[in-house]
Length: 390
Image 1 (cartoon, rainbow, N blue to C red):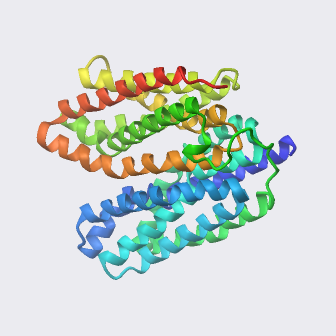
Image 2: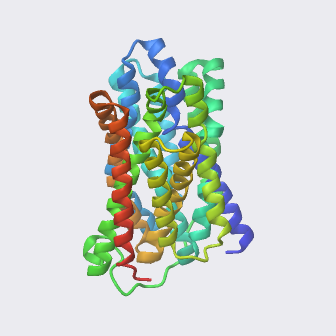
């Protein structure tokens, strides 16, 4: 595949990623309040439906990874667009809360088949061991999902209401994302070399050293997913608990997105000259330093947030590229699916746990717990160096 074709594929997947994230994961941030105001449904259940979607995604993720490994990403990503569109239609038509939650179950299946893990697996299936740069570039596209879709969602709600917004997003999936997937991605993925060990991506196909590496990496993505979910949901509340006004808290929270993109740009500028373990170590270190500064209230809070955001941005790259290097392209898609399940479950449950800790113990203990989790991840990352196989 030529560089031009490769760029076309990555760009198409980038657009698909922006629209997939905006049509699912980032949707409640804008729509939750209008839905509650219009229907009278409890806001906690409206927002909690996202957790139902993430749990569904976690249940489906291993099967998605296995299917991409066997058939390539084209049929899976096409199914994702259809599932997300179907979920949006159910949301828009939902006459009651149970049907609304059912819509998020369908959206969850679409998220498993269409967000980062599926896209990374698709690139790994297409480009094998050379997919690292493609994964890095794709995360840059994905980093603009909230920047594009939050204002779009707000505009659509103002023009068409929340139900009309869901219908528009369903149309976007069917008229933009689905055609991009079907016309740009190759129908038949290239054959990968036969590996020296099993290709199923199951634990039994891994050598003992690889199994230890996989377990360590699983722990890292679980903790990383939990930290990201808690900070993403509760950062503004934590900042206000420190005496920062709402407007200032929003301005500080807005630093996370640009910092994530900035971290990814810096990593991409490295040109893949260093092992992904260095990328993972840098990501975990930046997250730990940022959260540590917040927990200890040392230095400007804005600087701490930028460090955290940069680390979180690089973490997205590391968790996509490290398994490719560590375990090889043949098992990559299946193993990404296995890694996604516990991470998605952690992301679904962590915000509620963070809210419980904040309500019972306050902001300082919540910050402290986040710092300890980040330090544990640094330790797991150090142990991962001992299992380096490639």
